[in-house]
Length: 546
Picture 1: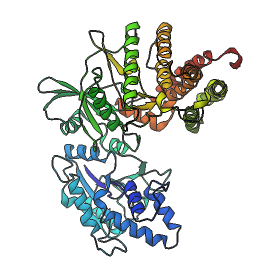
Picture 2: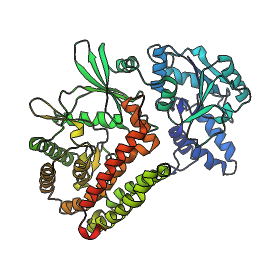
Picture 3: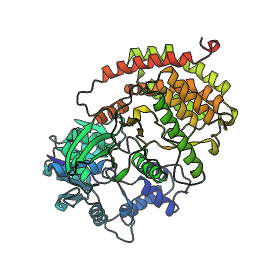
Picture 4: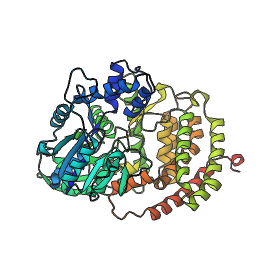
């Protein structure tokens, strides 16, 4: 296979660099709100001499500051697999020799090649590109001519103008990279991340592809590798080395699809927990930020399908140890709020309504969803919101919960992320959402999570013991009472993620099923949501049920 790729803003990501250099050059203030290259360009073009300022900035970023540019998330994995499979990759860039208004005359092309050398583009053990397969063109017309001469089966570019050139080869399949709602390109597809591009061109990763990535962060020979099904977000593999030791390899979601630094958070969290004597979590082994992958020890154990009293005791003790650790680290930097932390009622309401509005965008395609939203979810949500507001302690309705009342939380804590060893001890997994949060959210989510299977007695045990443990926080019990139905609604909306195309697709790719049945999965999730609504309604006093 012969694959052509554009360079700037397709392989290279400049957003942070443009912002940093614009601030350094005092073109924008350090508190300027925009984050992307495009936002800076649009801002400057509105100013007098703005086009000249923009072109000068662009020349400096692509020239003397090029070495600070980042790889586009996900492109490393794609190039690794292409190299492994023996596919030929060509980089064809519309790039002049020198930047506009650059008095230093720095060669943009030389800087680009040197950047690729530093990133390992030409190493056989890395991306394995041939330096002769890098082409620079002074005009867009010349660029398209080169693409035609190379006879590429695919070409990936961030500019539709390239594909719209009259002499663009008809036999080359087009992928327009970026957040375009629509485009006039013929016979092309629009994708905004390299995970989707990789899937469109290469299909699912083979075990051999993943083994290649694993070798990059291990010092052992691989004997066997197998995909573990059932993980809804990251792709997870079990690896066996030549000494019959097992490890877990996690390939985290594309950072453009999910900007949370999940690898960094999970790896550093597990390092911290082991440092402080937590032996019931996996040991981190190694990681590669570029490939967004982490290697961890394999933990033996069985799924917990019917939790007993002892299991709940173990989970409670783990929370207590996390709280003790939180007290030690309360005045130290190192952790940010947990993923989707809810430190005030205002924040959890915002998250729910954001999810609800997102779901409404796609509801018109499904009659059953329109009916569910209009006659069930939205009316009950309004009642829940009023009820919770009447009970929620005033100190954290709009203001964040006081720091001394927060806890370092796994955020996605429960028996769905847990294994039980033969001696009855538990091993807790998945810490990629870890951070500071309200312990009320941890307690409520443990009860509401669809992956849990708690009998009423076990729910009571969990709730009552943790209410007692957190009783020094005088508002804890009232906050939990107010929060229970509101978190129930939040889980209804999470369950319905299957109706959101991007999230449903991410789940399909993580599970790795080629024939993933979206309609069947949506039907199952909607039925779950109906049951959850009934459970939420049962938590409300009679006077607010109707």
